[in-house]
Image (cartoon, rainbow, N blue to C red; front, side):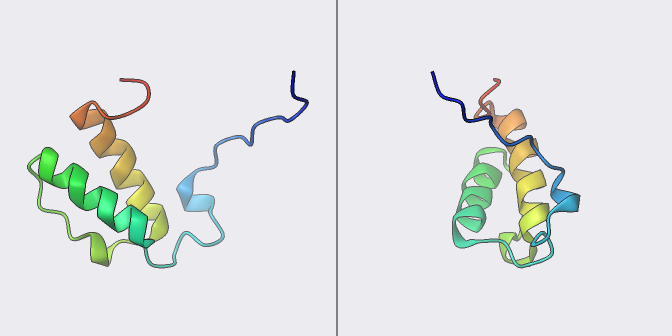
Length: 68
């Protein structure tokens, strides 16, 4: 058994880099999820923190989330 303790989830609002532009993978995933959810979201305008929040919301909406 591993002695590694998982990092607790931090609110994206508290991220040090949260105000940086969304990463390429985040933008791509937001685009995929927004198409599936039939939403028009401009992923290029999102920060890292905003993209994370949008991804969480859209995962829940589309059933792609891990807890779905």
